[in-house]
Length: 549
Image (cartoon, rainbow, N blue to C red):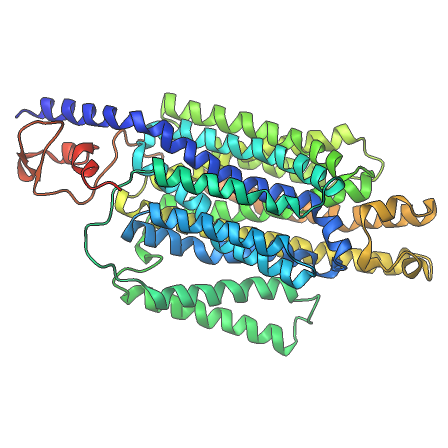
């Protein structure tokens, strides 16, 4: 059999499998909808929730608990999906997410709510990472850009719908319905995954799971987030608790590296860090995570407290950011798939994010709302040009058997950035706000209003003008300077991305372990040794289809 005929038959096999891609893609979109709707609905309702449960001082834990739990689980899902397959893990992740929603929806105090959010995070860590890895299983890198661009666009759409639903639930049937809605959506997502996902199963025998690596990574991640969350606020930086956490984080990190060097199947293989593009995109992703989540997590609260809008209107004011992200994400993906060039997109996108952060740092209570919305749109434009492309660069640098692990590792560091961003920005914001309110509020004003720990947007709107103006000014002056602190850091990320090596995007899906003989669409069996290397790397679908689930 000639090389040409093999290539043609491989292409035919690939073409046949593409008829299933839309069904798979629909299930992935539904899962992304589940995750992103929850996050955006919660951010809009958060000021009312913490006021109702009397927990403003625990506000940052509602978001930090979710991000921390999902961060810890990212490498676990990524590695296990490479070892045992992705379908079962995908369904398990959705199930955990729904369980966390039930716990949170039943919460009568902040503790139970935070526990529910943590359980959601244990499942949520698998939703995005497994969706990205599943796309890599069925779509070549050259074509993947348009699919990932659409996934980014779906995230943007749901992030617009989320705040609107969150506002409607908060002012209508109640914020708990923002969690209850995940139950029918989750069931639908599980059914969709069970019926439509047909992916290669693991045939390599019983996997060797790196439990030691998982445990050490969890300890290091938790310690790092707790240090940034508690340091300088709950505990002094030189307190015994912070020093212990800092030392424990370093010890766990060093032990993790030593364990990974010896593990048979390391959860985060150190050889990943030998790839230049992985290192550059991972560092840039971490910085982007700090900026994105640090900024977006508190914008809805700012809008409600400072501009005086209600929760629904705050959701509407987020539309420019998400609309810009939607357009730039889809257009970026289409451009990459059409021309195969991608390096310039994340570089320009990161610079645009830096510009948006600088503009947000100039906010004042008297700033026109449409101007603030334009600043958010600029951020959305930059995020859409960079987020999905960085994942594509990572996936294009590794073979299929390592795609889950590599994608998870990259997302892990981005989520570490999200944890740090949310925690650091939240700590600075709350600390600044507490100090400013203590200095500026007239004596007894906070107590008369129920205490600064119980401020809600509705309560602040009903306060006397003099007191309300002080609180609004404090919220603005506590948050705006934090954005400026992040500008130099984001510019560093843009410089790093200039050194990416623009490798050609693969036009086939590499299968790392092939049988000794292959059968392609009914053709005669072919000895593996007789197939040229470039054809071995082709996406030979029929052999894998026989082992699909």
